[in-house]
Structures are given as C-alpha cells and as structure tokens.
Length: 545
Image 1 (cartoon, rainbow, N blue to C red):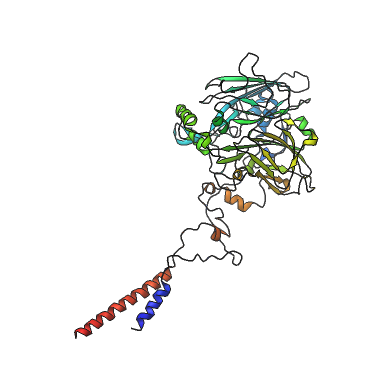
Image 2 (cartoon, one colour):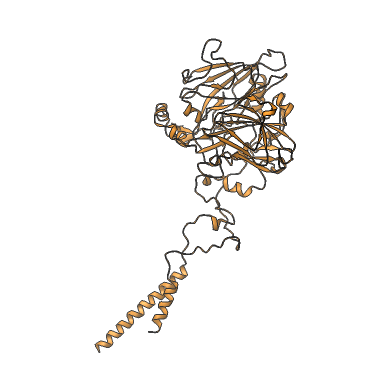
C-alpha cells in the first residue's frame, strides 16, 4: 500500500505535458553551435573565363580591365566597337554574333570613325515552354533556381541558341536585359528588326531624335498600328542630332510586351574625332570601351538597368507553346491592372547574381559616370551607401551646372533615365571612404525576390582592394553560402538556418520527445495500476473467506 502512492508520485512527476519547453537559451548567455549541414550550394563565382577580366587589345580595340566575377566576352566588345565587317574572322568566331549583326561603313565627316551604322536585332524567348517535353528551353536564371519567362531584343546571332548540344541553357549573348545600344551623334543609323518570334513586335525609339517616316515613307516610330509580324523585318532610320541617354522598347501591346523585357537603353554619344563607340553593351554593366568624350571627364562608365517581372505574366509562355493560346491568355485573360511585381532585377539579374556582373568596382579618387534607367512598372528610389552622387542629366537632357543636384537617393520614374557623376574622393560628402558599399532600390519591395530578402536589385559599390581574385566581395562568405542556394529563394529553408544561431532562429519544427521521461512515466503508472488491481483482488479474496 505504501508503494502505490510512491509510484503515483513518480508517474505524476514524469507525466508528459501538452507542450514541451524548447530549452534554448538566447546567445547572449550561452553560445549555441549548430551542426554542419550537407545542403549543396552554388559556387558564388564559376570563374569560367578569368582571362576575360584582363585589360587587352583585340583587333586594335582597347578593352579596359573588368574585375567582376562574370566579365563580358572581350571579343563581343571588339565586334561591338568596330563592327563585324571590320574585325578578323578569328575574332568574330569567338562570339555568337552574325556577320551582319553590326556593320559600320563610310566616314562621312572625315573624322576617323564610321558614320553609317547597320544594326540587326531579333526577339529571343528565354525560359519558354518546349514542344519536345515538359521542360523549359533557352534557360536563363535571374537568381538561384529562378527562371521567369522573358522576351528580349538581342543582336542577330549565329549558331545555336544554347551553350552546347547537351545543354538547355541559353548562350551568353541571349540574356536579359536587352543590350544597351550606343551610337554617335550625327551617325546614319539603320536598325532592322528581324522578327523571328511568333508574335508581332516593333521598336520604338523613345526619346531618340527620329523622323516619323523613313525616307521611303514607311513607319519610323514603331507604334502598335505598324507591327512587324512573325517572319517579317522592318528597318528604322535615324540620324540623331541630340546626345544623351535614351530608351527603346516594343510598342505592340506595350503593357505586356514591355513588362516581358522588350526594352533597353539607347545612348547617343557626342560627336568627336576618332570616336569608335561600343555599340552593344551586352547585359549592361561596365562599359569597357568608353567614348572619347567620356574618357576626357571620367575614369569609368557603367550602365545600370532596373527591371521587374510579374510571375503570372511570365508563366504564360511557360504553360503553352501554341501562339494562339499565348496570345489569348496574354491579351484577353491576363489583366495588367491586377498584376504584381514579383522579381526585381539590375542588369538582368537579382541578388545574389548581381554580385557576379553588376558590381561597381572602384578605386579612390575616381570619377565614374552612371547611366541609370528604370524599366520597372514602379518607381525606383536608388540609394548608394557611403556616397552622394550628382545628377548631370535627366532623360538625355544635360543640366546646367547650377541646377545639378547632389543626393544619396534618386527617384526615377518608369521609363525615366538619369546620368550621374559618382566621385570616390574620401571627403565625407562624395565618399565616406573605401568599403563594400551596398546600393539598392529604397522602395522596400525592390530588394526582394518574390518576397524573399535579401534579393531583388541589391548590388555593391566595391573598392577594388576589398574584392578577391574572382571579383567577389570579401568578408561575405557566410552570406554567400546562405543565398547561393535555390532552396533559399524557394522558401524551403530558414533565413538564418545555418551557423551558430540556427538553434535559436532556424526551423521551429517538432521537438524530439524525452524518451527517458516517457519510459519512467509508463513504468511508474503501469506498476501503480497493477498494484491497485492486485490490492483489489487480494481484498475480494479475503472477503470471500
């Protein structure tokens, strides 16, 4: 009888409760060490072509150093400067450019550079459905595991659209954003759209000086009433008199085609002698062969191109490959007024891929020219940490010195362009000193990727001593291991699911039961019940006697 209350007391003491204490002490008092994980992550930098980073001369074209992880193909730059007709076949064969993608002839003003420029563009689909199976074709990742459907203008190309026969990945020439196009003031420029796509498109030269009609009386404004249908081509003729940072985009069903990516920056450089400009800047970013006028006033030049994507719109081309279905769903079912911006890109990528090709790499005491364009549907509020830059031009119109504003946040409306002068002089105003200074859209959604942060259009203004030999920022290894993982942006892992703080901030999950407690409780309770039954039986037996 004495044993029964003792066993009941033990059972009550060890009885499981409906909730169990997590037994986590905040790290201010106890250091928690997480177990090593085996989650595979991408290499932050593939380092596929380290030789492309070097300053070099190809077919007489001087190409500046590019310390970034994924530098431009210098052979593309050589062709973009001299034209496919003025470089060696050996150089052209190192690119994916067609022989007639860019031709330059006739020095009309006898100043040492060509003045008749022929440009041929195509429309390319990225991450679209394939008729051959349940997979995407011409794949292009904007971030780890993120492949929205996109359309882009691209220079006319040769060879396969894919990297090789065993790949579904688009070759490097076919990427977002549509290339930045540069010509010289006064050049006679002929831009031919060869529409190899399955829907009609146009090219509207937004802000670029052009006549409404061509010399033959054909459309020259690229409006919706003059579409270029599949398999057709059309040539737009311009001879721009005004220099500045302009824009171009498709004007067929603009709400949809524009937001699918058919837009790009168009820059008219000032006319100067011997001024061979870099006609294409593939993927935007650093201009490795600046114009004569830019070299006089600046140490470096960058193009910064901001875009956004509505994943509902982007998925239309991934769920069908019949042009009639795509046209129906995009034109008559999809409603732009009910759309969202899910993905935010800088130069065709979202963070962390912006660290590969959108880093501004600077030295102290440099003057850097930035061309900034907003191709998003929403406002961009560009903020550069540690620096204040000066607006030198709005929408291609140079501002008088007395009206140039120096700020650290720049409001850029949709389709608007700014030219900025960024100085890295450590004087407390232009620069606070060397560092790995982030620059980003200060509209909070801009630094997210489908709601996950860090993401979006975040990038870094990096002083060169703080970049490693592959052009990646130093002191960021823990962050890079976390975000170069497609599971992170698929929302399959905790934001702080790695490292010392994972027990406190990682997945909550289910707590493992205390099996010793359960066993002791079961034994004590079972023995108590058994003894009670035994006592009752003994008592009844005595009563019968």
